[in-house]
Length: 505
Picture (tube, rainbow, N blue to C red):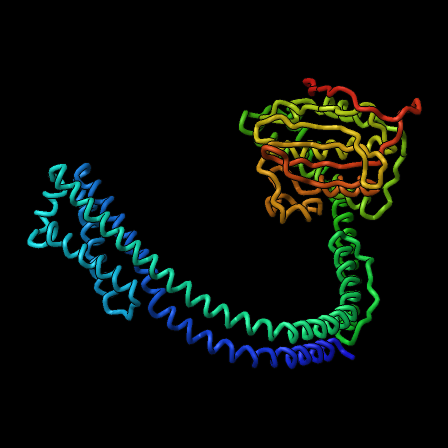
């Protein structure tokens, strides 16, 4: 049976089950709607209007208090607008079908409002109102505020009465709904049991193949283009699995073609690039003749770009060897803390323009791993180069620590922290890919190969590498390798934190 047939049969069964429930509740809802329509037409309008009237009274009082202080015409206009809206709202409520308590509260509010208008509004022009608000005696202004407060009391009474009416009608609707619910519980329970059983059967027949395809897609995303799935689970899923395998095969071919092309081009460029570099050095050494300052500067810029291009080509060749799996490593017992300190000293602060040199913080000593020393130095150096461009003028911090792994064995963790803008969460999955950076393109002064090289070297040493947000801002690029005991056979023990700074070159 195809996936479409399974889903169609399942949905048809569920439709039949719930159609009966819908017909039953349709009659109950009709009764509730009639009550609710009455609720919405009168009581809810009164409740909302009374709340609005309280806001208008607050606005009138606030504007009346602020106008004599600021003499801002805006407050006077706002006061008059609120007063007009208050009058119109009271008139509109008078035309509704009210119960006894609502009519009495509204009548009191209307009488109070009529008295307010007779005392403070009728026969007064805009200028008269402005003079009254600005220069009224304390006793007159107190009477003005008392009238507003008296009106506010009646409006609150109206709102309480409306709430009681709304509550009574809601209770009536609730009683009807409760009766319908009791009648429908048995039908709902039966429908849920049948629907759940049907859903489980359908999901089991589809989820397995989809999980396999998902795992294969994850492997492809990590760069494993040899991943394949077993087509199964119906015609559509079998077709999807076959298409996935064909896609993986073609992606693998494209990846191999890309690596071969980059390796060949990089190799072919090394010789002419070396000639260009040597030619510029000869010219800068003034062997053919003297240079003026402008010519020398142009040659220096050209040589710097040639050196940058040479470094990029070297990294391309190194990455091609690593991805092809032909790089040979000579494993030895390496003290990672000592290696990081020596790497920082070798680079020197001059490598970190605008940065006060990197700091090394050793949280655990010794921190031994089995690794190729040269390859491990390249990982640390590449991470330092990456942090250099995002240090934000602050020191780069290198940390070394030994901590337990998820499987219980210790692991040595090396972290390089910068104080830059950080890496967006959507970029973390691809930042260790070739030619990638945290900003969606090539970062300044880099070609996006250093982190890819780090990924390959760490993976070859059975380690992991990742990036995370640093507390207080910036990023932490870290990698972990399986830790081993010290040369004397004593397990690694935490010691006091030490610091080492890069020495001038």
